[in-house]
Image (cartoon, rainbow, N blue to C red):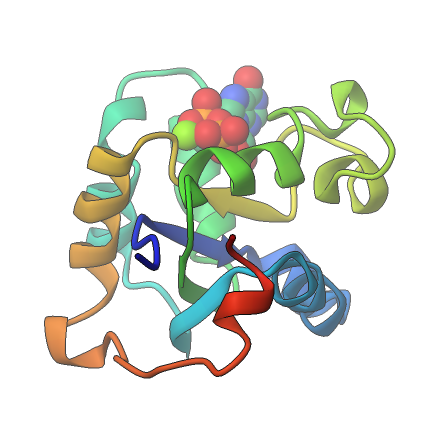
Length: 152
Ligand code: IDP
Ligand code: MG
């Protein structure tokens, strides 16, 4: 049985501007996660506010919305066994200063408000966030022939 948990990952405007997208995508590919959707886009302000609704009212909210809408992002959906927690572990802590070397934020980031990547924090958040950025028909169903070399 091939596992199907999904997570929403987004390479933030700093990752795009710094030319880090390819390297970061490679990490998820090499890990064995399966890419099922990808969209390069400028996020409309209303969409950013929906995505980050849980942070409304916090002191960093306005700067977070202006950061995430300041340039294009790469929105993605990845699938795999425990995809949400596996990807969060690969990302590191929210603050790149606290993130271990070897994690994405630990390797590529320097500051909390410019932290390279977003990843869903639970399967429920993933479903919600995927629904904000993708239509159901944009999630691509396909078979990977390497599956049996990734899952026992
Ligand atoms: P997460 O991205 O690790 O899930 P959250 O707490 O959900 O972290 O915060 C969402 C985003 O808001 C963070 O990735 C970061 O870009 C930004 N952020 C969080 N806390 C702060 C802060 O104290 N100052 C500035 N930006 C923050
Ligand atoms: Mg979060």
